[in-house]
Amino acid sequence: MEAPPLERKLIAILAADVEGYSRLMHEDEERTLATLTAHRRIIDDLIAAGRGEISGSAGDSVLAEFASVVDAVHCAVGIQQALTKANRTLPPGATMMLRIGINVGDVMVKDGSIFGDGVNVAARLEALAEPGGICVTRGVRDQVRDPLDYAFQDLGEHSVKNIARPVRAFRLQFDPDGTTELSPGAPPTSAAATSSGDGPGEANATELAFWKSVQASDDPAEYGAYLARFPDGTFSALAHARIAGATPPGEVSAEDRSVELAFWDSIKGSDSKAMFEAYLEKFPMGEFRPLAEIRIAELAPSGTN
Image 1 (cartoon, one colour):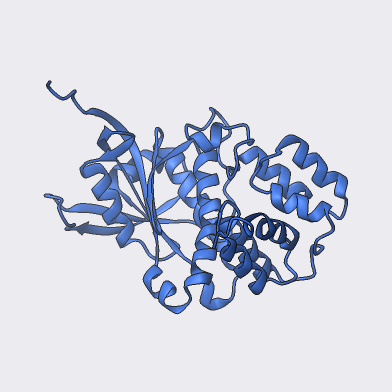
Image 2: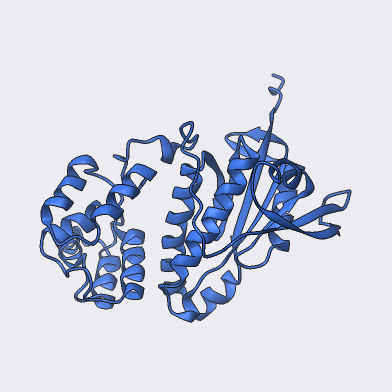
């Protein structure tokens, strides 16, 4: 039987990866994975809020597609600004910078993944970007320089691997300390964004905004209200811990709290007793201590290690 023709579509492609990821892993694997987990939550949430869809992710890289070039650029700026703020809560050696490339082009679609020169160009542009920066093609620059108030630095033409013609690259200039409000218009296209917030491990913009409004509170009723609306939400374990009287906010540094939350998120769905024991060893008075002890007790009879 003849294979069906590949679907093609014209989209804006955002490619991103972490600067110096191999070096960070070599220096401290545990800390780097915890930071990456926390950063990925920020990235994934903003892509969803910006009406994008994640097409692929492997290790420290993310590939996303947007129906609008304007949305792609807005989202990229929002991501870099959010990560700038997140990095301020981390020790100097643990900060993690992202490089982003954006292209607009025709791509092939197979099994939900995108392929072709359009994707390759975005990936090569990402390699040209500075840590914390964004690099775009002439086509992207031409489509957004009138509707968006951004300046661009012409980097000239670059010969990139596996692309026949040189690519004209532009560095997008923006305020890394600013805040970009993503357009609220049509609903996002990604599954994470369109969920009600009830799916385990997924946080949409509504849930994230709700959590931010209560996360510094000392009133258990506010955490109860969060759980009533998002019983299996991304922050449900933390809400339960706050209600149960776990370590109150403010007793540990922002740096430790960020690392602890990322560590917990990376193991909370695990069936490995050793993972929860490792959490208690690292955070003996941590916010998730009661939950970790419960999981250890549940897993002990089965002999899971």
